[in-house]
Amino acid sequence: MTSNESSKLPKIGIFNLIGLNYVEIKNFSDLTFNYLMPLVLEPKWKNIIMRQLSRNLILCIGSFISSPLLGAEIQNPDFYRIQPDTFGANMSLSNAWGDYDNDGDLDLVVAFKNGDVRLYNNALGGFTNVGQYLGLPTGGKERRSIAWGDYNADGYLDLFIGTNRQGNELYRNDQSQAFVEVTEELGVGIPRISARQISWVDFDNNGTLDLFVADRVGPNALFIRENNVFIEISQKVGLDDDRATVGACWFDYNQDGLLDLFLANQGDDMDALYRNNGENFVDVAAELGLEGGYRTSSDGGVDCSVGDFNNDGQFDLFVATYGYNKLYKNDGHGGFSDVTEAMGLTGNDHMVGASWGDYNNDGWIDLFVAGYHDGDARSPHDRLYQNLKSTFHEMNLEGSALNGADHGIQWADFDSDGDLDISLTEGYNMAGRHPVLVNNLDEERRVQSLAVNVSDDLGIFNRAGSEVRIYDLTGRLLGSRLVTTGDGHNSQSNKPVHFGLPNVNTVNLEVTFLTKGERKIQRYENIRIDEYANKQFLVRQSNDTALSTE
Image (cartoon, rainbow, N blue to C red):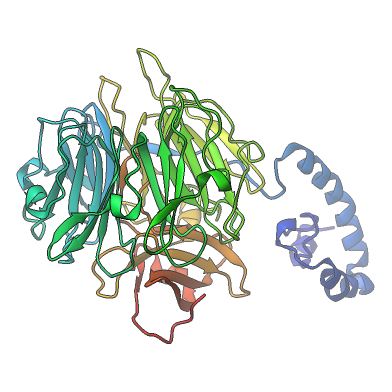
């Protein structure tokens, strides 16, 4: 068969025999009788097809044996570090992305063990530390956690900072001209708290941001906004858990319209999943098999991250631990199954942070897990797990520019070129660095993506906990993303969700908002992704009661 004949041959889609991946075929009966048979019966194609089938069958068998999944391609990450002198300070523990000055690009804040809080202004891809000039602290306390949230709904992101038993801090953003501490004024000061994961969420769906602070040494704290101050209500609603909580993830695991809370607890404390019943929270981790299994005092959960790893529309849960990491698959009916071993994520790795992100824009979210070799040196021990659909491929990052996080990880397309870049924090390496790395994905892959920014009905604050799903024009689900409620180790970015969208040009989009105990869906059709290159697709929550509900 000539190359010209081959190029004209229609793609029939059996096990990649002629060109289409087998995973795209849903109905073999229709394929046979409506597509193959007419071709075979046509003399022009009969001999061509038989020769091609014979030749490619051999190739297919070999590929099946050698590859974890047909059609899956292992792609080594290609990232390079920018401005090493700018991002060269040591003892960084947590980082978060957010557009604090509303200029349209993402800025970066980093919290340091030595008390420094650096705010890197992003201007055309170049970064400058402006934190000290805007009133953010430069020392005095051990600052370990950080989160962006517009608590006063003035359109500017405010900053909450957690310390190690030295009092947490809330800084109001005065229209990007200065940050003013309002901790005691607003009632969010807890003197002895060892604040770890901080989450700005509207857990009661009343339209105002609430504040959750995980405590490593005491009861966790939950604040609601009333009469322009915050009121601590954790004991009232059953969240005053005094286990050693380090990681926290909010998501509606049972799809009842209310945000539930998973807690990663350190040491020999079992993990928790608090189901939100509307009036209070109840720990259901034991009955759902999410406690984490047998632990010693040196084990325990450290961080959690929520993502739909298998593109079934349900949000799954990964837990990074000092012991054995866990991946829990959401069955869509209020239950979970432990698929850690089946998906190739087992290991006793002393891991600290975890975050999902589709680094290669293939449509399947990958997993970055950060940690360190335990011992005196405490050098980074990071892993990038590429999602191959049926399993994860572990990429050992030793010697790579990506092996630079012993604590924080944050994915973000900070240069708006269509692929996910990454920022890391390496708090224990006294040589000093907190790398920011650019993804060097080829342009053809970069443009096959879509960034979606989800806001409240006023267009002011990010609707953390909202769910975004994208479909092709036949109705096939291409991916799901949770608007972040915090991951990557003790941080919460305020950023768009990102989708890699290979082999499609036009998509439909669905956003699920949680409001007054209901799941309300807003749909958008026929979105051409090329029209949103280098910019975001903006979604604002609607108050239209005619919206469909689940």
